Image (cartoon, rainbow, N blue to C red):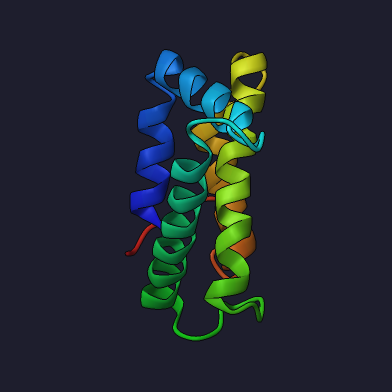
Length: 118
């Protein structure tokens, strides 16, 4: 999960890019939006990548009992939701730190907010 945490940290240095992504992703949910298929396919790929990454780190079950496929959409939702909160109030939401706290929910044995490892 360190690579994902690094991505969240990198995104925190690019508010304009994060804003464009958030607007396009939100707008693309309408049936006739030209980016609808792109974002649907992107989320399919990202969930698959997240599940594969979780499986590589934890095996077929995360410490909390979820499968990688169950945890993957949660991971993506946290990332996207944090970005929106951060865009609205960057002084109140330390996106990289909050994401690292979330990772401790995936692996309660760590408990220190650090992702470490793979």
